[in-house]
Image (cartoon, rainbow, N blue to C red; front, side, top):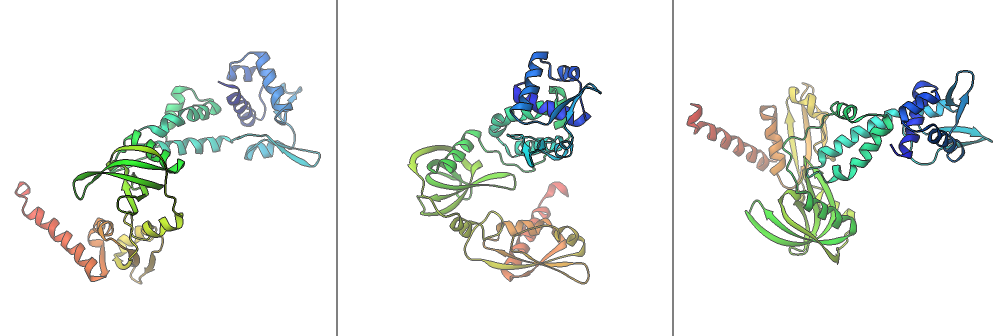
Length: 342
């Protein structure tokens, strides 16, 4: 346990017990008496920690007026009319638990282990601040479970290259597999931003081959290399206008409006969902609801409509309703022609 972790442990031990003996601190920190004395002196003199020794109870505790502040965040005490806070980052036990939960969420986004590898030292420090051993830390993490269904893995080395290009504002050379064409091609990109959407990563970039803004799925990248040449920098407002106006992952400037009617059963869930930032929801007297939603390319919208089966109907436009009807008919035909289930 390094010095910073010991400082956190001393604070947490005093906070939890409203006072702790010198011997208890020695047992918890596993340091020599001389080291513990230096730590306590440093916290008082250099970090202005309101730690005092109570001779009557033979414990170290927070000075009067500091306990209330210590329960809610950084240690502080009043001196000369001013509040003195400890410098650096200080967390309460609840805040540490929240940070550990966030670490689990990050690990769930981390397909190739890139982020986890770099964040492991931070995770170890958080466990140290809570005084958790290896086994206790593992048990603690099992209390939080992040599930990412249908996650498409991204190769860690290409993810690192993409992140580096975005943040260093340099061009990126990639070999990209286009699924619709079933072909691979080389592209030089000026990366603008990264997007995590429905359990996979995308790169929004200016494509120098097609001379336009495009969205690339990072799981379809076969190789990537950061170039020395500076990226073409575009205002983020321009990127958002070009790629965020449509429905879901599909961009497009030409927007259309769809009206969907959900049954009363489906409305219980849909009323709490955001399908699009600009959606309009209107509850109906029978418990059903209507949603008006913008879209540019219908592929993902059709998929989400089909997910609700008979509990949703496309009211307008007619061409979107026809697309859904065609998908349903093709699905039914696939089952009708399937002799294995006869």
